[in-house]
Amino acid sequence: MANTYTLISSNTLSSSAASVTFSAIPSTYTDLVLWASHRVDVGVRVNDQLTLRFESSGANTNHSHTQLSGNGASAASSRVSSNYAITIDEGTVGPGATSNTFATSQFYIPSYTSSANKPVSIDNATETNATTAWRIGSAGLWRNASAISTIIIANNGNFVAGSSFYLYGINNS
Amino acid sequence: MTMAIEVNCETGAVTERPLTPEEIAANEAAVAQAAAAAHEAEVKAAEDAEAKATLLTKLGITADEAKLLLA
Image (cartoon, rainbow over all chains, first blue to last red):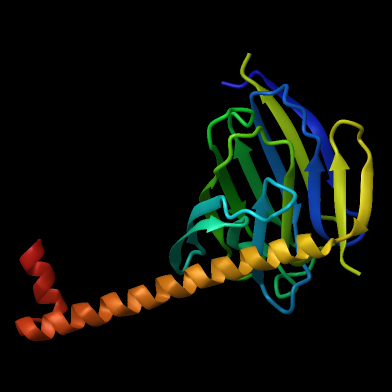
């Protein structure tokens, strides 16, 4: 059980941006958790895709994930292996969603300095004033022996102003 | 212009800069890879459904009757 929960850094967008990167993440914690509240400007879509990756170059296909989704009317599952990023379908809300609603995500990354591959547990909830909204649980993986020092969260367009991102470090002692 | 926000956790500095071509390519590649995987899954599901229907026809039973047999 974590007994510390320390804000490492945060950013609330004052104008739109395609991606938010946390770099130079200190290696002094046991786990990391990233909380994000986001909305994107892609087309007329109610929901759109969210991407997460742990390396700046984006040149390696060493991310994978399995996703379970439900929106109150239907359920879906998907798996993508060996990708350039973890991709969460319907993971954020777009212009088709009720104005000023945002999706919420939590990315929990245990043992992020371990030399083993890095799992990430992802929870998403979308918001809109409609009969359906997505609730998504995903298991992600970054196959790399390096400590995580960079986290990049992006989408197919731009995160709108007001989207916010909070990175916490957790210590187990 | 498409912008990227970078927060340096060590210094606290926040930098706003245009996305590099490599970053744009990385995101597009990830999205394309996910779309390809989704398409592959859809094709497999369709193939499985067709194979199931063919087998039921061959056996001369309905899907409900097959469920009864397997229950």
